[in-house]
Length: 257
Length: 199
Image (cartoon, rainbow over all chains, first blue to last red; front, side, top):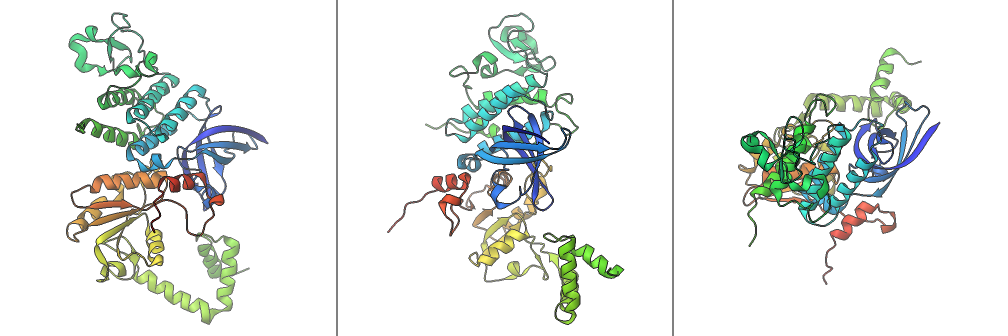
């Protein structure tokens, strides 16, 4: 019998038979990992197998290649704020759906897991909406990096300067400075300053406004949608498009007095 | 060993939720022993329901009349529509006897995994009911799960129009329960939705 214990976050739960669920977790040290949860549809576990819930998981199987069973205990349940606020919930569903579709199974991504956990924690905590939205966009940038399609946002692809980087080439994923973009700027993707790796921490890491968030998600979405990034023919999940639609509404909001 | 017809009955019953082959065999044995009292009335009831059961074209409920008994009841408030996931939820709310409006059955929830999007929920059927019935309030009685609440938000967005109230069910401590036995999420929701106790 093989077994491990780990912390993780529920990505999805699909009913299996009358009582069990097939659970997909993003774990700290075992990557995305699935397992059968007997009784997962029952009253005691129904709240635990919700996407975004932090759990302590015990996986057991006779052979490494088997699906195995998972025993889960909630450590960070979803907050009412997260379930009750539509933009936060849309972001949570998008995060989980993208992770479910993009991450290879049983491939550890430790740093990405911690960024994922931090993004979900910021979604469930009171605070400015730009803060959690920035965490979601940064996580997608880090996901691209982990999948081997990292954006090169450190210096201009044309001049080598690290200053005034404002665009990204949609082909190479390399940054381009405002000055070097010249007549090609309409064909480049806007790069919001907060998405650059050296601005991960506030105050530089706070987006200037909703337009920055939408630009960041358009940028990461462009590369995530490439057929060689997301496995399978399905492309980006519909939940991500719903998030983007909701965030675009922020741009249309009239600022208060 | 039972004959072919009885065996087929056992196998059919075993496909029902909550029943396996063993309990299906026990049920069939009881039916066979009490033919006049159970088997024949069951046969007649099944034949009648198979003949007459229809999806209500207005709300999506299942009934033997068209429209269903709820939609046809003139004593119900047509200005109140309660949106539920499926017929089981509608029947659960009807058991309480406390809701005197009408219903709308979505037939599912948005699901990223199963690829169920807003277009699959038949929301245009619900929108078509708003004008003619002069609906004042839509109550979204959907599960307190990620999929349930995502669906509720999408439906609320879609129904946004002046003069129409869109509300959701409260979440909190179930009647008759002890705090000690509640899960963290429910306790958290109950604390957040606390209300002043007035004399």
